[in-house]
Amino acid sequence: MFRFTSIKDYHTALNAAHTTCVQVVKYYLDQITAHANLNVYLEVFSKEALAQAAILDAAAKQGKRLGKLHGVVIGIKDVLSYKGHAVSAASKILENYTAVYTATAIQKLLDEGAIIIGRQNCDEFAMGSSNENSAYGPVKNAIDISKVPGGSSGGSAVAVQAGLSMISIGSDTGGSVRQPADFCGVVGLKPSYGRISRYGLIAYASSFDQIGIFSKTIEDAALVLEVMAGEDEFDSTVSSKPVPPYSKLIERKEIEKTTSPKKVAYFKETLFHPGLDPEIKTKIESYLNDLTAKGYIVEAIDFSLLSYLVPTYYVLTTAEASSNLSRFDGIKFGHRTKQSIADLNDLYKKTRTEGFGEEVQRRILLGSFVLSAGYFDAYFTKAQQVRQKLVDLTSAVFSKYDLILSPTVPTTAFGLGEHNHSATEMFLADIYTVYANLVGIPAISIPLFTHSNGMPFGLQVMSASFNEAGLLSFSKEQMNNKV
Ligand code: GLN
Image (tube, rainbow, N blue to C red):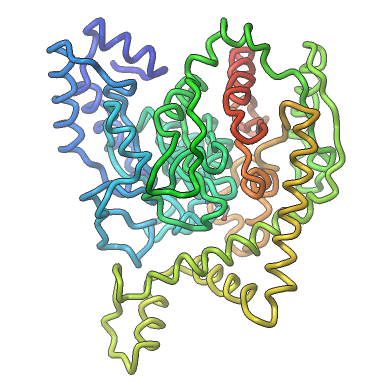
C-alpha cells in the first residue's frame, strides 16, 4: 500500500514505476472517504483530480519535462480561490459562490504539476483558534477526536496529520497555520509578509494575512514555498525580492557552507506566562539547554510588551476585517435574504445577520467600534503605535540574533467545546503566534515534542523578514536531531 513520506521519495517511487499518479489519487480518495468523520474536506474534486493524474502520468510516459510538484496531492483551505470551484470561507454568506479566477499561489502549484484534491474546512473567514466557528461543523483532531485540531486552518492541518493530502495550503493571520500544526503534530510555515502573493486569498486582515504551508517535512515545505513565492502584478504588497532556491539551500552541504544560524534569543516573559502548561515550559527549557550544549548561543531577552500582543492584534485585525467584510452585503455576491425587506439598509442587515456566524459578527462589531470617530485614537491609533514599537524592537533583536524561539501555543489541543463559552479565553491561544504577523516576520512550528497527555506540541522558530532560508535550515537540523 502507498505510504507518503516526502515529495522526494514519492518522485523516486514514480520514477521507478512503483506507483502512478492515478493510483495515488485513488488512494487519497479512499482515505478521505474512510476518514469522513474528521470533517476535513468541504468538497473533494474527485473526478478532476483523477483526470489531472491521468494527464500527468501520460506526460511522464512521453518523457516530457515534469514540474517540481509533479503529481503532488494538495488540499487547499476554503479561503483560496480556484477558478470554477466553490469557495465559501466556511461561511453561509458565500454558500453558493464560485471562484471567478485562480489565486496566484494556487496557479503556481498547478503550473508545477500539483493535483488539487479538494477544499478544506476552516473557521469562518479564518477567524478562530479551534475550527469550531465553521458553518459546516468542527474538524476533529485525528489523534484524539474529542479534541480540536486548532484553527483557523484546522482541516488543512488534519489532512496532513491523517494522510488525507500530502501538503495543505492554509492562511495565517495570527497563527492559523502554526497553531493547528502544533496541535496536530505537523510542520506549519508562515512565510514573511509579502513573500507569497495574496491575490485570490479571501481577505481577513490584509496587513496580517499570509498564505502558509502544512507538510510532514521541512524539505517539502521549502520546495512548496519556492514554488508559491514571488512577484505578482495582481498584489501590490508582494515583494519583488528574488525567490531563493530554498529546497537547495537547506541541503546539508549548503548548510555547512553558509553556516546555519547560531545565535538564538527567547523572550523571557513567554516562558513565565501563567497560562503556559508547566510541562511545555519544562520541555522547552531543557531543549534550550541542549542547544547551548551543542554550541548555540542562547540568550533570554526582556519582552515587556508580551501582554499587549493579543489586544493589539485583535484591535487591528477586527478593524481591517470590518472593512474587508463589508463587501458581503447581499448585493455584490453571495447570500441574499429571502425575507421581505423595507429598504436597502434592511436588506443589508437581514442578509448579514443570516449569513455571518456569531464570531464573525462579533469581530465586525468590534472592528467598527475601534474605528468609530469617538474611539479611533484610543484604540486604533494606540494599537498602531504598539505595532510600530514591536517592529522597532524586532529589528533590534535581529541585529544581534539569528532566530527567536518560543513554544507555539501555551497548551496542547483542548477539548471540543472547552473554550467555546469565552472569546477572550480562546484569544489567549494566540499569544505566541500573533507577534510574527504583527511585525511581518516568517515563523514556523515544528513538531518536536509529545506531552505526557499523549498530544503533540511544537517549537516555534522565527527569523528576520525574508530569512526563510535560515529559518528552514535551522528547523531541518532540529527535525533531523529528533529522529
Ligand atoms: N486565531 C486567530 C484569530 O482568530 C488567528 C486566525 C488566523 O490566523 N487566521 O484571529
